[in-house]
Image 1: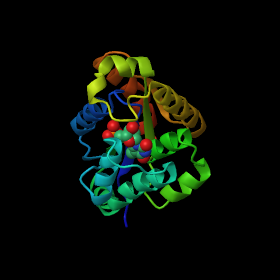
Image 2 (image 1 turned 45 degrees about the vertical axis):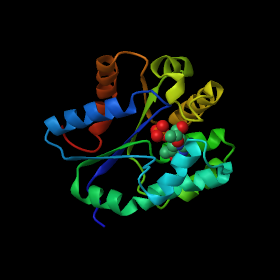
Image 3 (image 1 turned 90 degrees about the vertical axis):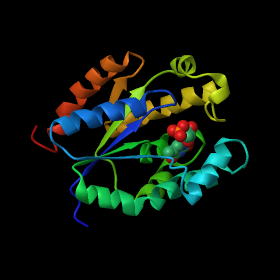
Length: 203
Ligand code: TMP
């Protein structure tokens, strides 16, 4: 496969603004003339995605290791689509990808090296953007009733945030303070992002 595209993934705990900020970045890159594809995980429309939805809705129980494999399998279900996009587009922006598997996996007691091996046959992201917020900010942004079983556990969200920050330091991700307003977050993101982008393209 001839890979032309670069993968940018947006990461962060619930309510960190992944969808909004990935949309704004997509618009900005398109304005500069780049072609951009968009994907998100979990994809709840696939066979495995339906299992994940049932788990998140509290209808099914899976051990943490099975969940880890289901999340990874959900990405592999889309491998062909990812590869096609990478052939056709300059950038593929993905809301939650391998880094979600690593961060949430760590908090669930999954060995990081093993988790990375499970993910290793997927195209790896070039740029990871961590939208960093505390669980208190996440809580303010979403009502209790609409939260899935992970999202109701604020101690869990704090632990995921810590795991994300640790991985960000080890793997040189971009970290943006996402507790600010939408335009402020986009501005800070673009400032960091455009510096890194020069490694890949001339803009
Ligand atoms: P969502 O709220 O972005 O749809 O994600 C649902 C939950 O799944 C969220 O709590 C994060 C979790 N998750 C993992 O634990 N591992 C993964 O690999 C992914 C993609 C999500």
